[in-house]
Structures are given as C-alpha cells and as structure tokens.
Image (tube, rainbow, N blue to C red; front, side, top):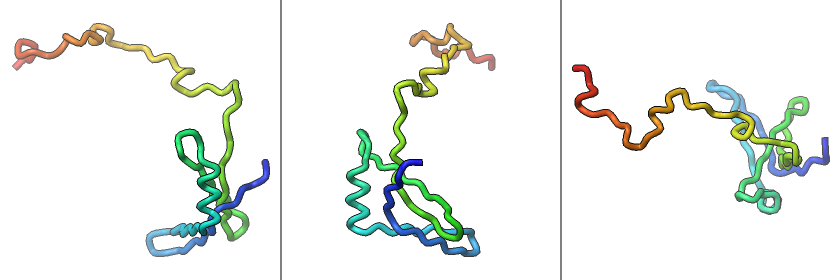
Length: 97
C-alpha cells in the first residue's frame, strides 16, 4: 500500500440504531480534500479500521492504461431489435382489450 494521505478525524458512536461514524474535517483537511480532487471535482476517501480506531484517508488509486470500464468490456445485445425503431409505439389497435 502506498503512503496514506490522512484527512479527517473519525469517531464511532454506538447507538440503538447501530454504529454512527462521525467524521470531522479541519480547514487543513478541507484543503487536502480540495488538492486531491479528480477531474470531475470529486475526492474519494476511505475508512480503514485499525484496532478499535478508524483512519480516514484519501483514496488516490487511478486505473492504469490496461483498465477498461465494465461498459467497454460488456457487449450489450438487444433482444428485441424490432423495438429499436422510434416510430414503433403501441396504438389502440395493439391493445387486446
């Protein structure tokens, strides 16, 4: 694992509804989040459990050149090619009742 860029302070509170993760960000943490945003403006963070504590850090994983999105790997086949026509819509005569 590469070096972690820490951001935020995590505290877990157990309630009758389950665990509540309280995450606080200082001004310095906000700047770290801004500096590590992706092209779309998003910053991905991860929580890692270390013993009884949680660590919040920047997830800066980026795909290499061999990575393909699922949409590119999966060929979508239309099972009903006759429905591809824009003018193919249901009329009153098509309804059996």
